[in-house]
Image 1: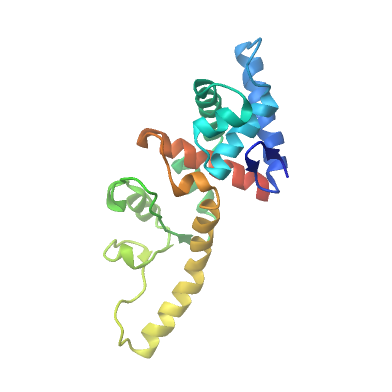
Image 2: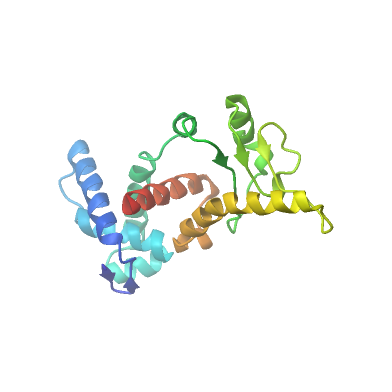
Length: 211
């Protein structure tokens, strides 16, 4: 476990810290950075503390003995680097072509977000002919999206269908719960333009730690 002055990061973030440190070191070498207020290892820990614990820039700046502006720039740089390592939608579609089916799910973060029907994911999955298991919120999505039956007095075969459907979809629910283990995603204070990169960074760190 890697502690910082206000608390602790996740027990398995030692591996994540090493990985992020390597990425930051490579980036500094690439752009020819001669000096930074924080060494790469401390910058990595700063970014992990922000993502994992959801600490504010002011809290982290005080804990690491740096200015708020330095904390902001350091975290933003680390998040941007990690986000570039995340797969694009096209790459994800290519990978899941080999799968038997896809679990389609979403979650609400404490900000305003556009409706699922507007982001184009359902259309892409339908065009590829990929079978999707989704919850009741996707009723009427059409195409290859499979949803449970609604209603309280369902016929036996419909109840069996819903039970089987729920067993498959629970993997998606677990994935969402795992991502929200990164506390920053429970209360985002950043610009909405930054959310995609933050989620990508978290996804990269999760996959690396669980590999």
